[in-house]
Length: 345
Ligand SMILES: *Cc1c(COP(=O)(O)O)cnc(C)c1O
Image 1 (tube, rainbow, N blue to C red):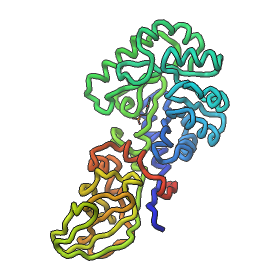
Image 2 (cartoon, rainbow, N blue to C red):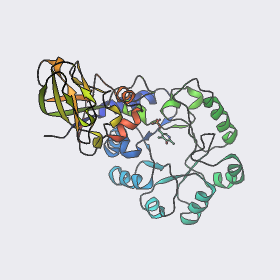
Image 3 (cartoon, rainbow, N blue to C red):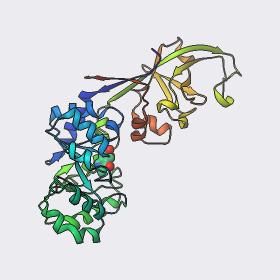
């Protein structure tokens, strides 16, 4: 087999959900947008349903429709993009709950699907999605009389617990929503770790479920093993890969590994990342190609059949650091060519 292999530890996903849920006294949902952060929305949601998650969140209506078909009727599936032109049929047929973001979306929803469940997002300073203060003041009364599923907002800097934006947004959210009886939701993973003031009625963790920062105590979820296609001996002075960017300083053994930037191993990792054979680090040398990596296995002392790039020795965040990005991007970039298998560890 020449494709890499991803193992997804669903018992770790479930344990992470439980650990986050245990930090609150309110309801914990689960964000499974972007196909469950690249790991498979259906398998993740199915595993989380078994441990008690009842509310799932996706980015767009198409994702919600696919999830509804797999999960059945009993769960709430909310769509962050709200009710877009052309979404009405999908929202109706799949009993999705659009989180309405603007007066236009509210008008579209009320006209197209009166009495169909919806939520509302408010902007508290991130300036990305949601109604601003003036618009909310104008429509709040009529919107709330339709009994929305929730009124929510989103924190811009919650991964940094000391950031002044956190209490600032919290204060605005209070001012916009205090006194209403509709359930309120403010926090994703980062906000859940900021303490009870941030929890309100429903929390919406994503990355923490998948083993990523800022949930430091999370259990790792993904392992990615890559097959070695061949290993060759280089003399000191020989080069490897495109652009001759790496030159052997000593007689070396170089393994050619089957995975590249087309599989989400970003070109920015060139000459920076490390692969592992058990506890032994093997540096990635030269440029990342579309389908191949070259890795220095000289110090291993033997030729490995496969190397590990995500696993016990290297988390999604550690690999992300090497590429100047975040764990979220590593996960959601993981390529379609890999085989994927759920394991229960
Ligand atoms: C992605 C997202 C989440 C989940 O965020 P994490 O940082 O992955 O926990 C929650 N709410 C909204 C609105 C989002 O866009």
